Length: 433
Image (tube, rainbow, N blue to C red; front, top):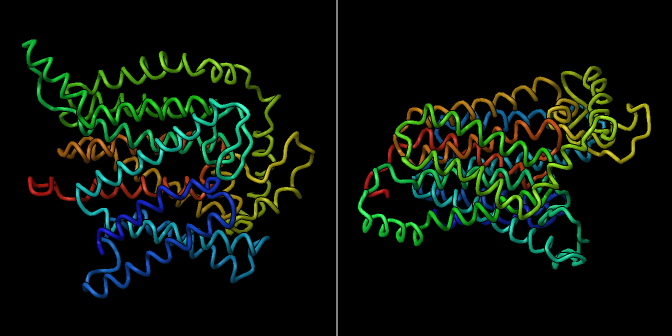
């Protein structure tokens, strides 16, 4: 039963982005229903085995903010503080599903082997999206085989929006890089030619090479999205965490420096030049405040926060609240703020937004702490990757609304949970490995 629940967790995580990024009510409802059903199985299993329903106290820095959001949304509904009760109700169900999913991650990703397997599933999620998106992108005029979505020159995978695809790939790439770092050797290599050839052949046949090839495919998918901030935020996050690791990583692997260099030289420059990184650069160069209206959406959203700073206008209500506040007609239709911080502040109020922000910053600090203090390569490597993912999300959320996608929110919560897990699990023994 334990393995069954863990397998179902992995399946839900893999399935979540497939139905249009879960950005439709029926799709997000299917995820919520699956999580609720799995949690019922968890309750039955815990009662039968006489084990605790809830994880250890170390998990509460993530669970308390998520539970607080559920309570806040319930208050908005009960006290009639929302402008759109139906959408607030939907957001409450999604938030409750995210919270229960986090509880399940804490309860069942409970060993070093489970941490490794769960991280592999995250990489497979990104690999599937990258391969599927690249296949569609390289076949102009082709409709997607499942939902018949029309072709675009910017790959979007199973998502309906390219920037969300870029964000999702960046999150999974971060974990994948961390997984690869955790597999690097700590010992010095031999100087003898025969041993070097043997080590090279062993590397070619090892899981490390499979992970590295997967990361290359995912970076190709990221570049093909042509997302300006998606690509910029990822490589900025990678550079920042890499610099930190080079100076403060506890017992860094001997090839860590060369691996980091390879991401910028091989992946960004060589592979990027083949698959159109110049188009991303061109979009960045052509970006101007005159041609973009996202900054005007942020500007016109600030009065909403000023009018409802504490309780907000209700979860999910930006769509129905914003039209009465913007003074002019935009070139496009905005049902989101294109800034997660602004949208959360509008819908949930400033205090709840700050609480969620503190959760992200705490997990980032904890990831850095694991890299500096712990001596288990797997835990250090996963913390390395999670730090990349968190910094990317912090940066990307300033210009987009990726966390409004249930699939991305579920993936990001899983990454935050992984940080807590690798910070609190005891050092694995030989038997555990």
